[in-house]
Length: 265
Image (cartoon, rainbow, N blue to C red; front, side, top):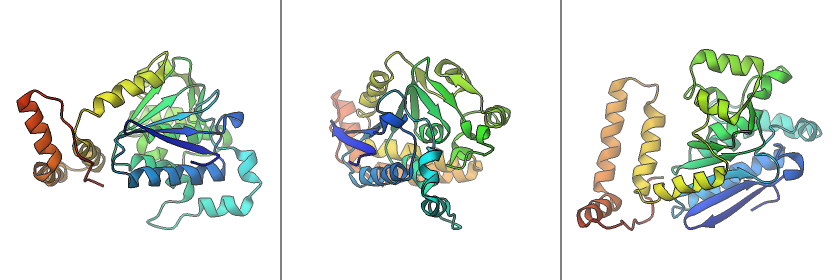
C-alpha cells in the first residue's frame, strides 16, 4: 500500500485502487512506481486468484499528469529511458498487469484517457459505465501511445480502427467502447459486474487460468505450429498438477472443487 496505489486482498481477490482522486488519478512518477510495485507484490502471492483494478474518486484515470511529471525533468528522462530488451518505467507500470498469471479485471468510470486507457487495456477484462469517457489521448499532445498500447490495442480492434482512434484522439463513451470491442461489458455498477466474473473464475483451477493467459498471449499472432506446441507443453504441465486432479475428482463427485495455490508463475 502507498499513497498512490492501495491494495486490499479479500477472499483471494486483490482489490487495487488508484488513490489520487483529487487529480482524477493522473499518473505521476510515484504512481507509476507504485503500480509496478503493486503488481510485483501480487505476483509473489500465489494465493491471490484475481485482481480488480479501479480508481478512487470521480475517474478511473485521466492519463499522464504532465504538470507533475514535468517538474522532475531528470526523473522523467530516467523513467522513459529505453534499454534494448527491457521495459522503461512507463511500460513496466502497465505491462506488469498484463503479465500477471491471474485474471485482471479493470473497472472504468469517469475518465479513461491516455496512459489510463493503456492501463485498462493491459487487463484481461474491462467493465465500464455507459457514460465513461475513453480516449487514446496521446494524439492530442502530438504523441503516440508508448505504454504498451501498441500491443494491447491491436489485439482488440482492426488496424483501421486503431489508427483512427489513435490519430484523432477522439473521445467516446463506454457504450461505444463496447461496440468497438474495447470493453467487455457495460454496467450501471461495473464493480459488481467485475466481482461476479471474478467469483466465477475462482471456481476454476488457478493453474488453468494462468495457462490460458500464457497460451493466448504467446500464440495470438504466431504460426499454428508454435501454437500447437505451446498447447502441448502447457497441457502436459496441467495434467501433472494437483489442481487438475482436484477438478477431475470434484466433477466426478459433482462437488465444488477446493483448489490448492497456483503453481504456474
